[in-house]
Length: 488
Image (tube, rainbow, N blue to C red; front, side, top):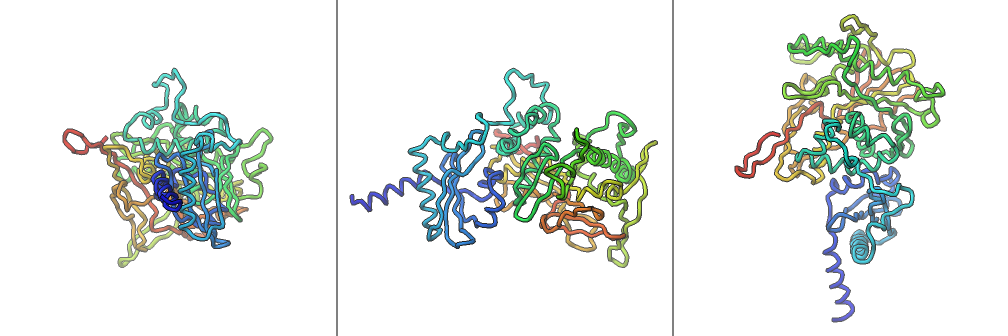
């Protein structure tokens, strides 16, 4: 066989050592790897890996020079995919693709893959937020962490958490312990926010306080995460259990604004040892400061949904100090905002209008989502191809209804494993802009998210068609003997 034929045969053999990936699966692995500047300078064209997905590869077009290149990635010491080899200034996409697949084959055959990804800036040991300390009593683990760790149908969420964890936890010595034992909801909320900001194209740096510094070319803002937790003392410990429409209306008009107000005001008033608020610290001063809040005060059980599925309607009236009233007039929806001075529950009364309170001019916006749950991580794992064997995932909920006269969202029911199903980390994020902010958060930085404003007595909103107001995810396990699916 001539040299040319030998080379061709060798390349054909080498190409058996690599395979193409979908964008979604590749993104699952590199959510923390992409840099904001790279998104501007390069157009991703195709995604690759070795057969065991220990190495990843990307073919790109340089948008500045209009030529092509490739990047090879391997895991570093803690398990994060990092760039290890690259080549640029190639003449065509096809040529770059051949070069990448040759590089994957060469590394598989000739290099120590474990050592290949070492960067020198990471801790020495692999990192897995799901690994519990030896000798741990399982009964001491947080019940939701045990649900994530042990339930077979949660395999997709485990795959996602395992991939995201090494990007956050190594810089926070308390992260794993709190995630596993005491503050599962709060830490999962931080994982979710990090993933959403990364998906939106921001570089995300963890600070001691506030939690996140988000940046991209021409953009900088900081975020402090908080959650609404169950009250164990005081007037709010007497949690109402609304059964009728009137009881639910009262619950959302008074009790829930107080719950949101407690969490938000706590962050507003918090100072460090030097007496500085979040927005006065070295990394935050002069930048938009955002509080991100999620409601975990009432979890779902066999009898009812968790409060987060419906409590969002209480946040807007509290933030802006107005409630929305509506009526249908000649078939058209008429909406008006009415001033709401206070919220009262039992013998406790608080002023309405968080954004009107002293000091809140330093808060640029409030972010909310009801999706920072295990179910979200499950769905994102299924979309990336990590669904659990013999399990089905059905999502049911309401999306934004673009009809200007709509009073309800559009109901939907989706098979999450359907190849045509699409979902992003930020689909449920809502941004409430502070009309009194000293440093406003530019709405153009968050294009594609649901954003809300208030000017004078008028409400304004920008809501994308794909926005999901609320949803729940049902997991079904296929019974092997019968082939039937049962809810689990």
